[in-house]
Image (cartoon, rainbow, N blue to C red):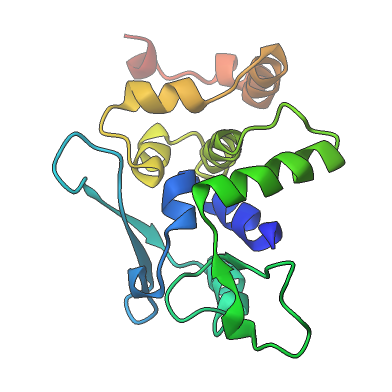
Length: 180
């Protein structure tokens, strides 16, 4: 039951609360967007739009019909095989946490936090966007790019790879206008 939720979180960078409370009313198949209320000091929060890509549409389509209101649900242990899929229940913060703790222990990742998936999404989006911080900032719903930068991981191997990509040609063919 966690797989669709995790795939969605890694693909979008959406916060846990937004994932767990996602309703079908927030998924706009016609306009191709998912609407969220972001973490904000403003009453109700600011609206964040996530494009409904083909990958996300596939994740969400697989969940359709399982619950009339909530997107991500679970099959209760006491549910028999003869019961309808609509008997699935929405995740709650407490119920989700117990299952998540057991799943991460079983996966050998006892230190994993759900929020780490948001960091993974940010780093993947940065690479996919060619290093465009503004794109990642918008995806995560940050109002300040400095907040976004705290999500991004970089080490010496990343710096090395970037410098190797630039190569010696970047030094030889640098226009004067770029230097001055």
